[in-house]
Length: 209
Image (cartoon, rainbow, N blue to C red):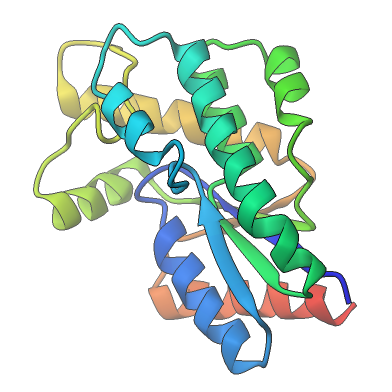
């Protein structure tokens, strides 16, 4: 049986990684083979991307292409072989996250779609959203600070970090919802257990069809 790609999409702090790991554990308990992949996680491009994100003069279009190259490397070397073996591949950020990232930075949707056509489509995509203030609280709890570069905020909206970050998140999530207008949006502002159970129910139903 051919496997499938399940993508959890959203901004940093939306709960993507927490729920990728939770979903992986749930599916493994159900007897599925599972692998994970995602933005900036390949051995080929992960470290170069991390370095370039701190270079404010790095072209946004070039950084977008670096993210796509990073995903393509993981797809070719990890995801495709796993799908052929019947595994479920869970993406910690995939095509819709990249589209929202680029739209927030003014990149042309038609150009991005053409580039992203090189990647296989996900079988199921869930957009994870929460209030900007909740997302900022999560990042502060995890990192102790809002670093505009490690958080991917190369967009200088105004001189005040918190209000800039809030506006960035509002724009990003508006774009994500637009990109995923035919998909499923999950509000992660609720308790972790409630959201975990909702995601497991959605994914479980999709795997049974």
